[in-house]
Image (tube, one colour):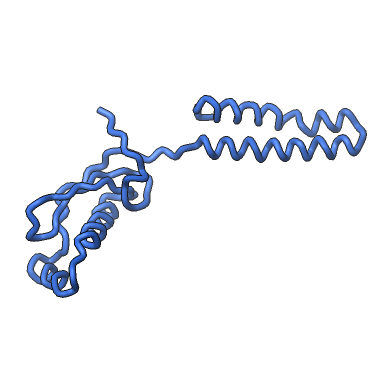
Length: 143
């Protein structure tokens, strides 16, 4: 089974996607949240901070929870459920656009030299790379 979670719906930062569940001591219901973090410990800390912040606990309640339970949040599960794969398409398009500009600048320079060989040499390599980047961006393929 493959679980797809949009990283924009997760809390935290990191390359690994975790499903963390837990509760504030004394609450009846568990809460589960997708968390981005590089380690299980970081995922649990991020989840705990977020859950306590959302509960809007006053300072006395926080102190009472720590005194009575040793924590403000019980983390029940912390399972890695995926890995973030960056969306490379915008980067490919930007790289292709920048290379196209460089290629145009090189062609302009070569024309100013009035040497056809210089013009061909200036754009030979970038033409192929630009074409491949645009094709990859158009098809969504990874290069």
